[in-house]
Length: 86
Image (tube, rainbow, N blue to C red; front, side, top):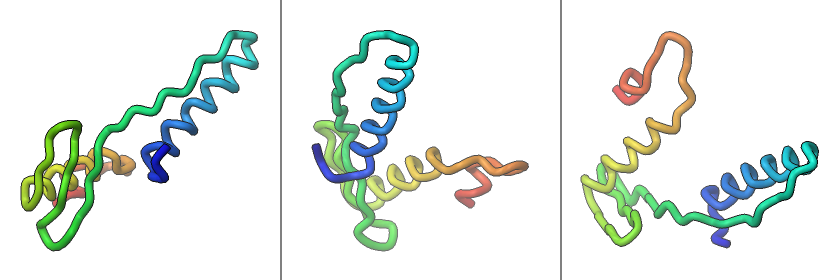
């Protein structure tokens, strides 16, 4: 298991579902890690991205990283993701 947030988030969700199953008297299920890829900013408007077999770098990777970041932001009242990005 890689020591990144992606794995920790997936494990946390699995534990919550396992606890819920136990409380309902249902059988649990094994944990399966799903690698969603890696994104890293390496400078101003520059990044690297590995999404499955696709590897990109530079501005394209940076735009992907910005898009993923905005998508995962918490929605605040009377605002939207586009406003936050701008």
